[in-house]
Length: 150
Image (cartoon, rainbow, N blue to C red):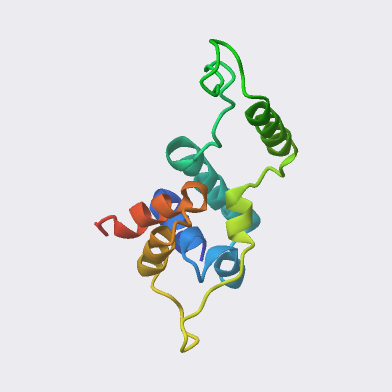
């Protein structure tokens, strides 16, 4: 068994495909009785590739740019716009930081109307078309599921 599962360590794309497959994720690793260090390695591969190539960062505060004004004198700021911007910045600071990987791995597994596993490429493509890029995971999954097998 170790010989077979050891092969998964030779290719990162295998770990990525398992963890990005909408029907597999961590449940697959549990069902196949992967050892804890194998699971940790697969998740590390997932996280490192995501952070290096796909992570979408929230828009940074635009503090260095000129603030919008309402056509008044140079440097005069519209008080309504200023109040709205201040409220927005406060809400952004208070917003819960979401880890898209943890959220994905713990999410519900989708099935087709016939209660069958979904086609991973088609499923991610539909997610992307709906505008649900899952903070970069959709692009990562589409790359993984469209790469050549050999």
